[in-house]
Image 1 (cartoon, rainbow over the protein chains, first blue to last red):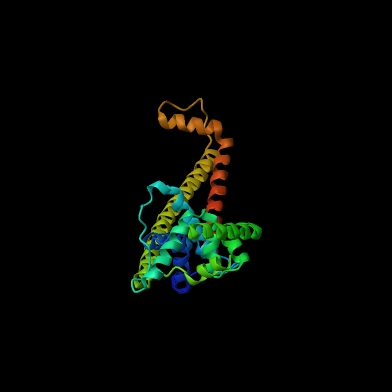
Image 2: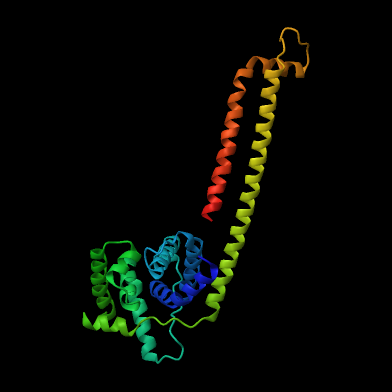
Length: 159
Length: 122
């Protein structure tokens, strides 16, 4: 894959990719973009092995998720910055800002797999099959994680 | 559960438009290309050095084997000195000289074949 072709594909996918990582990083935009760049470099290096058997976006999201997991393993939760820089647009109304904060704080408490499944299903509108491909788990497990994630989120948001 | 569905769909995280993001991606890709180029260059240099060493070794081996077989010496008549010892050694073991020479030939053909296959893949 040529550099230009790769950049063209990334141009299309960068926003969903960054949004997915933003949700995984609980609203920490700087960290999400850092992981996204890392993922893109890894994808570019491995682009020769992309055979087109799955969609480019699925392949890219899988790499990004693995990068996030690697980062998460390296940085223990207690070492992570206490206050995440919540990526809320400055011109948003304060109630929207509050809702984002509520969302990110609830997402922060979710287990990683549930958080990833919720982010891909609700924020990226992907099918269960695609999510299973990205998270490398059976479709039944994705459904289970989604269901558990919803239940947990409801509890966290209501409390 | 409907409320949570709606809450999630209505509150998708918003990504700030960042024109420097793709520029940074491009910059990192250029860096990757630079590293790839340097690694390929080093590998190519190493391969050339290996091929030259194998060719020199093979030529020397063939020459020594030919000399050993074409000009046999009598170990009992040679004098002292390092060169004479080498000649006696070669005379004694000349029937086995063909093995390292054959091994060098096989190694050279393998290096050349694998290199050509890799170039064809690229």
